[in-house]
Image (cartoon, rainbow, N blue to C red; front, side, top):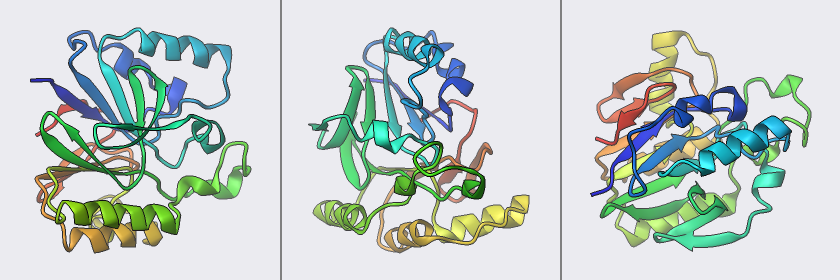
Amino acid sequence: MSRIQITGDIHGVLDIQRILDIDYLTTNDYVVVVGDFGFPWNNSENEKDLFQQLVAKPFTTLFIDGNHENFTLLNKYEEKTWNGGKVHFLSDNIIHLMRGQVFTINNKKFFTFGGASSTDKYRRMNGIDWWEEELPSYKEMDEGISNLEKYNYSIDYVLTHTCRTETLEMLCRLYGFRPKPDCLNKYLESIYKNLNFSHWYFGHYHKDLPHVMRNETVLFREIKNIE
């Protein structure tokens, strides 16, 4: 059986070394990044070099998008189907798991939904280091619901970048965060009310906290085995 490990935001060249340092996984194994993967970003020489180092790793890297992605470049990749859901292949072993999809990996069902709101977008430039596609379209949200309905809302794992509204409120109480719930938090909350799942993993908040809610884990730098 393949091993599946999971971690939080990488932000491209800033923290890709965390994954490059993994030396114990094989060609059968996976590393999942729950958003803010950050490749591709600006096609700098340093970025290209680090990306090729990741390509050379034996394992497969899977990622959902966060809010800090270059969606102009990311969406230029051809849409394909892999393990039951829509993806972009950045290389044979680096795969973007698109929003609102259900994938089968190790005979387990994974529901994926990337995206989040940037709290610092007021100091960013549209199309340069911020993209409005950070939040989902109605089409993506409808597709997510349609795909969940195919499985009667019974999923093993949920992978998102941000979290649902009630979980955000808990993080605000714990850490003093002040973001107001946006359309995506509310969408995820509406899904949660109907969902039967084992565990939910998300990133975005730059904290490592297992079981912030009963079966929800926020990830940043820690690399965990899928429970």
